[in-house]
Length: 595
Image (cartoon, rainbow, N blue to C red):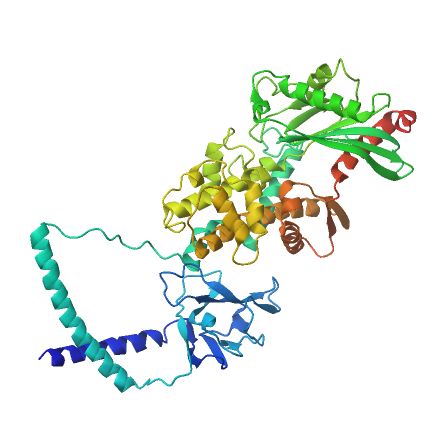
């Protein structure tokens, strides 16, 4: 009676298995099979639509056979379409695979000599994923010994296994019941397994960091509107991007001569550069960098910051024996300023977590001149830009993530410098940490780590660590592992390392695309046939792909007839400031400018 009862259950079980794997309702199905080690093999994905016609990007990934261990798949093949959808490019991410670059309603990857390391679950899916069904297929590698694969024998084996399973279940039930009666409670020592981390779930988690071309063009339109408000006298007071006129009446023309001291203050460091202009030649004579301590960034004494700059200036002048030279000086600051004249510049507000009380609204020239009174007499020009404030009026809320808002809540200046907090090197590390913390709380990261205190500490994951991860491109990702060890995270899997790299990549790519959008907006507004853009910044200089990402996205956003070049010479920012000062001096007193 038992055998008669079990047989229909076994048959139903087999039918369900074969129907599930071969489902024709799926948008993407996969075909593999069992192959002998060392022999040719192939994996095919079949689509219900012709990919060449639909112009959709495709990934093929390999997951370990045991899905509870395969958190994130390993990319095998990436196929991407150009922005114009005119051609596609496919890249094999792993060796020992072959692909003939053919995309129709089927994609086939071949393996010349299959090995045990290539066994597992293969899956193709659209990029970005759209919630469509995609069924995996398993590639099995055996040692070459013949195996019996007949369906009839498989059914018989399953039935026998079913009978044994029922007997075992009955015996186990009896044993558990006896123990339960003795102890008075059930065994609750085992814990349920945490959710499986997979590529789809991770990409859904980071979906808000992905910016498509439609979103970037919307941002360009908003930037153009805000810049126009700042330039219009009637609306400038309500504009977020104020576009304050810097009173630079003359641009350099190459005839400027003289020696200049340029002080470049970015909030964390003061860089002093001695620049010489003579006969259309530019020379950087000396340079030095001074670091602000954390105690120097906040305080009640309004002259504290300027005394620090004055002391650094005095140290630089004496250290390089410049006391006897006539030096015109330019100060570059990265804070919002309003220009009442060429040498009257008032601070509108502090940013970058710096907050010296009593300085907002004051003339920076006067404050610094007072600090330098007993040292040197200088002529100053302050150069500043304001696009980092974009979003203070809520116009960027549609593309801000929950982590952007959380970072802003932690800031000393809420709802201030919104765009800067999405792209600035000062904030990228903390933004990545917040995402990693969110993944950990959701059970998608570091599931076996007993203590996560270090990861939950604010500013523990610096931008420098992000760049270290981004430069770690080869397995087993030793630099990423060292980074986590440095944070006190001692136990992590290979999939955890891949997840950390994926998060760093998503946050940095968004920063590059937002920066490119800002640049494209300005290039289109200038409407010059050829523009040279001097780019500076920690991320741009140190990130392995930031320049390429920024350039390619800007290229997509501007018209082909507008040519632009991105350059980042070491001292170009200081040289540019020196030239502007020289041009200004030339317009007022040609003899002084050529002294």
